[in-house]
Length: 221
Image (cartoon, rainbow, N blue to C red):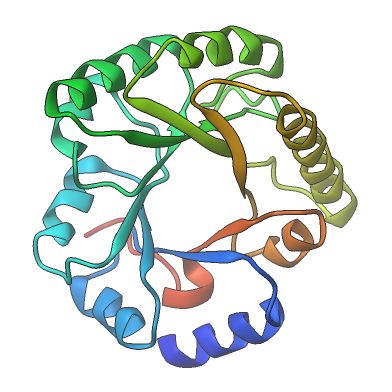
């Protein structure tokens, strides 16, 4: 199917639910992003800072860019003022780097705390038991705001997916009941091409879909 047909199918699945659709455009050409943009999409996700910057300069300025991949501390300086939401805050060291560079420019870094809910060594994200210390550090910042949580769950069957999505929703809800400085629980970013329907049923407010919109990725380019 075409990009437009894929988007129509996904929007039918979401069926009017208040869920933000982020089109994950990593490895995809500017032309494909423009096609999705012309179909009404304004939120696009990239994994790598360099790729995001190259595309950002060639595309409409009202696109909301989401950095969904691991953010290296030495790359923070390049994204200041260019990224709408950083999904991958996962350490106090990265928090401090964001605070330093955004403060210097008088800007706010809007972030999500990435939780490694499946405790997978191959994935980044903070373990749940380290969440409180990161939250405490966030409360001491002036230029970093936490807007919610993000997770990339382990691959598995529907029962496994539901388990991890429920775990994330539980953490999200418990944090939402508490009062923090610089922290609000507005965004729960979870669910991708193969499991977004389940994620939405379990409470996701944002889904990240790439192959389901653009087709298979070409990592050889």
